[in-house]
Image (cartoon, rainbow, N blue to C red; front, side):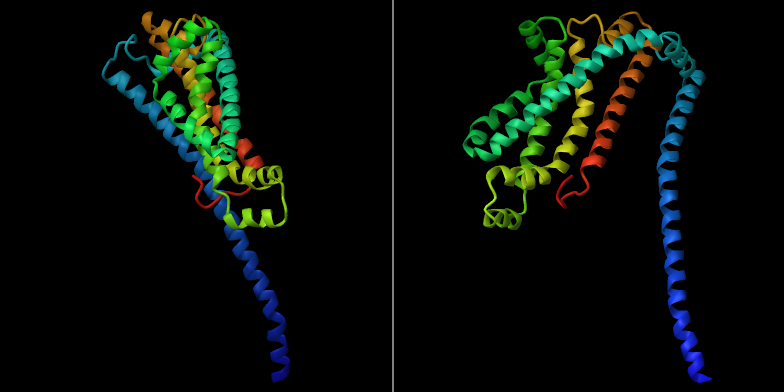
Length: 285
């Protein structure tokens, strides 16, 4: 009887262990679902609370519409003048995306040159820092004088505002490779191009996407600010026109449209990061 009981206990042990593992897995998945739900609900609650507070303040203090409109007035303007808002969003979006692509492409190329030619980095990096310290509102008139009053100076401003963060992050990512991995590649007689594409570039991708997410927002800001200097179309021009006309509902609606585009641009880059970057160095931010 004792032997039979022992054999039964031994046979039941794997089943108990499997049941315990299954229960732990289900608890983990339930926790993950709750976390995802919380990440979606809490921002919605925050936005709704802000809108309710805004409506309450406007109503309680009887704020004049030309100073601060009610949320209802802004929504009504978004609906009634949606075509005007979209028509002005289009040039801003073109300028921001074009500047984003040009600025980041230039930063990646120059970062690659700097990593392989240290003397060039030491000579020209201070120049890059100096150009970056010039305020955007000071760069814009200069570029308008040089390039005219079309889209070109707006794209250039968006590119310049994206350029520096990406350059710094890309240089850091390309240089911060694991010394042991670099030595192993050299022992295996890897060429410089193989070291770059298979080691340095892969290591730099998390750093690059961190900069691109910042650039996605700053490119839109750069395009809007550039439109304040002698532009008749675009989100920036519409902001100026609404301000001078004391059309606060249109002003708020324009700001919301520009901000929404910036957020969507940021989310698009975040989606690309999740697609291409499956790892992250411990010291990457």
